[in-house]
Length: 330
Image 1: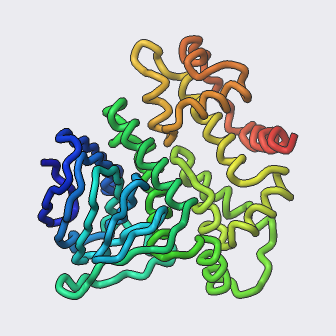
Image 2 (image 1 turned 180 degrees about the horizontal axis):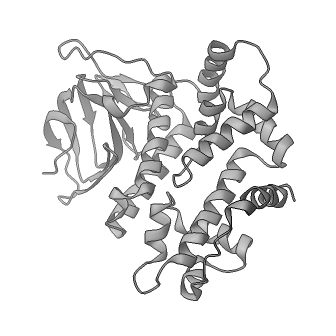
């Protein structure tokens, strides 16, 4: 019998089709990711952990799943808030996935109100169907578990922290049941009212963050927080200033950071995988394609060639930064 994390439950098997069950789990910065393939139906009753949210998503459409007696619709989620009681009834073999986000790592700053666990009163709930969010969670779980199984260093890498931040945002969207842009807009009004923030100030604040965290992976959400504006306003500012959107700018930043690291690495000791993971990259195929389009070669070719890293004198730093901005504009 497999062990499901983050819930205290009892399970009764019914209508067994096959007796081999499959189960996989990984942990990224405190967030638990699980996937199961069960060869039977089952009735599971229990209570979730009191220190976080469990988000459960069925992956099989051929059988009805009942949550506390009510059907769980396709592309809908079961949400177990801290200390929730639940009953999950499934008639036949099925697949599922789930994530557990501890309260202490849930990004409350993005509008998710903290809730106090009431173990004897909290009941699980279900959401309305949302195909886009369901597809995102399915893809994220699949990719994380694939990475964890193939690359043991993944769970302790910088890339795992990037993935965890993405899961926090995705979890907030699912739990809240509204789009992040709405939360951002409300936050902007709270922070700056309706005053327009000058473009130069937005860019300066973003630069300050990028310089302070020059060795870290930065997200668009980090830039919006630093600038104190909505993502739409940030997009407009970057388009006017750089001729490209923030996501593209950050992508180029990462590409060049990785290239510098590959050029400096010893191919006898380092691997492309280890370098990418430490720069927050985990979609290796897509990254290699972007890298080749920019530099005309794959990351593995850069590592093998081991070009020397040119040290730029401090007096030329400002000039070099301006040139990089001009390159982005072109």
